[in-house]
Length: 329
Image (tube, rainbow, N blue to C red; front, side):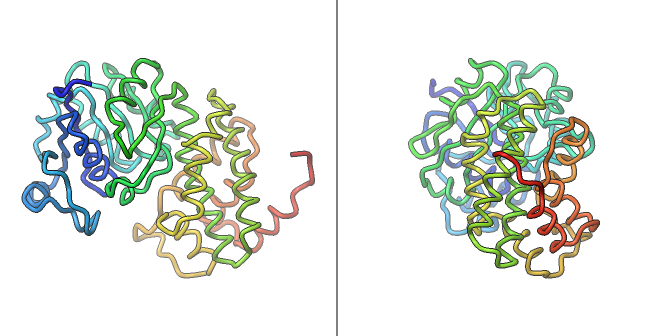
């Protein structure tokens, strides 16, 4: 990659800031973090810290900050690092400023709620002149920003595009592996959040690590069935964006989805009207509807969706899962 490569990361939350920092620190690209809050972006530029999102972490001196959408017009690679449900709005806001040959990479782990479609499909419709890729896998923002070893997957429909992105974004501690299975990579990223909630419920109820291990294994089987039904590759589920991300999210207390599930399992009050839902809570209902329409069995996902919408209590959900017919694995 030439030093003239320009990369813009849109979204100044923890993950977007971490991505921008880890790419910039290599010094092989000119990287700009773009946010909507002018005051915040000016503060980041002067302090080189984002303590609200990444406390105690110094941001690289060569990382630029801007609230002006015009800066992305010079970028050949643009990362959309906002939550999944904000991706369409971001495409509408920033699309007019994209360079004609810019590659757009969605870094969200979810399914569009309003259309029940994958984010790459939604973005291709919103940005038809641009190649759309997806970045997903096991990586917490704080670990990435601290330079701890992290590996993720980047998928595009064109292998040349995926390889370009992998080489452009990877560094000494942050490695990307190229894939052409956008379906598998996206569903792995979305469904692992659902399964992490289930694992959190198991932990919150004190059901033990054996039950968690069983959920992870059977959850991967569910994930694989839906990936295949939607045209993806089952083997993608055994990689970074499936198994890797699930193990991380279902076992680490850094995971908001796991902590959400633990609260459910403990019977702690959750105000569903005050933004306490996490990505997996939104993805559960959408994935359950997708699976039903495709005739795919996803009992764990169905149970999580029903617990969240209040149509099933947790003890009954556990009993139903444990009493399912015994079959060959």
